[in-house]
Image (cartoon, rainbow, N blue to C red; front, side):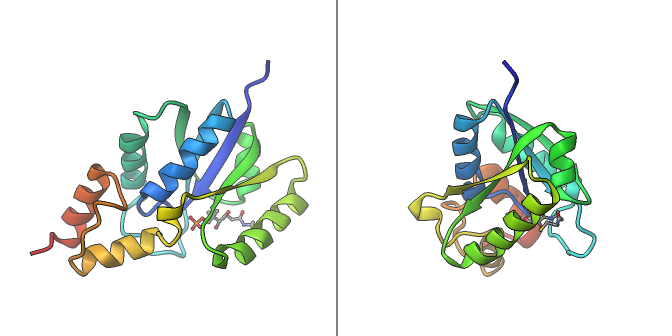
Length: 164
Ligand code: PNS
């Protein structure tokens, strides 16, 4: 039977427990999930592409499902086609995500009708979590251990400084 592959695209600067939650749900549905980091020259990320890929690899190797890690530029639907994905996975948190995600999903469908967007709901503790908020909490000396795996917390503390 043909392998059912999903693409999970994003900035992942850095990957959080919210992303991992979505990824675990996606691996329960698809045979393989390609987590792919957008190479976006317009953004000033905290971690380089290579650092983000390395961090994602470090925290996903223990997951049950099959996960591969990649990066891309250009259109997400084009990348989905290249990796043989039948679906694009996106996580939905609060209602505020909906409008942008809805626009992206409809645009992606216009561009490539054969690639479906699958929205997965995050679990309740992750509803208000984002990479940007985690970075801000870390920068201001707050405890980030509930939001990211230990390897990511270490990387954030090395980059932004440890509290105290
Ligand atoms: O983690 P993010 O920043 O919410 O991810 C956004 C991402 C990478 C999924 C989105 O910006 C994207 O798909 N960019 C690629 C450009 C593209 O395909 N644009 C047209 C479709 S809306």
